[in-house]
Each structure stands twice: as C-alpha cells, then as structure tokens.
Length: 83
Image (tube, rainbow, N blue to C red; front, side, top):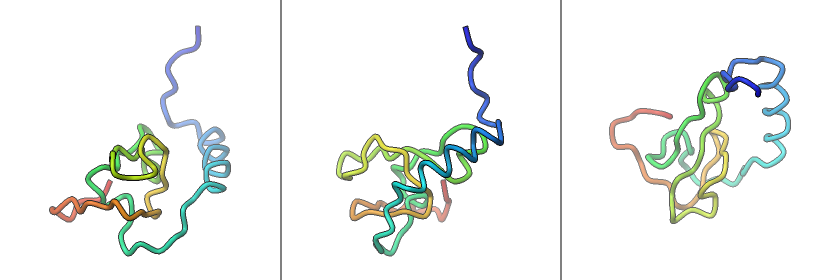
C-alpha cells in the first residue's frame, strides 16, 4: 500500500503542472479562479497554483483549475482573499 501523497514532491508537481497547462482556459473573463469563492486550493505546493472548481453554475465544476484561469460563473470572495 502506498502512503498518502504529501503534495510536496517537486518532480511530481512539475509533471502535473506541465500536463495541466495544456488544459488552461485562457479566455479573458476579467476575474481569476483563485479569487472565486468556489475555487478550492489543492493540498501541498500544487495548491499554490491549482484548485478545484466547486461552482454548480460553471462548466468547470469538478475540474482542476489554474488560479489565473477564469469563467463566466465567477463569484467574488468579497474579502479580497485569494485561493
């Protein structure tokens, strides 16, 4: 049985980042996912850049999203926080 992934394996993180960059949504929506109340950061170092969309109104619901991506279902956190 493998131990839980701690999220801090640099080689693994670089590989994920390279693979996931191919799916980035570079459409301009004015606001970034990392500032949306429905964006939940991943654990570990990947969570500095990636999170899951949890908005039922977004076409990206349930998908890993880069913090700088965006969509039309953006909902501001209201407190200025990010991620």
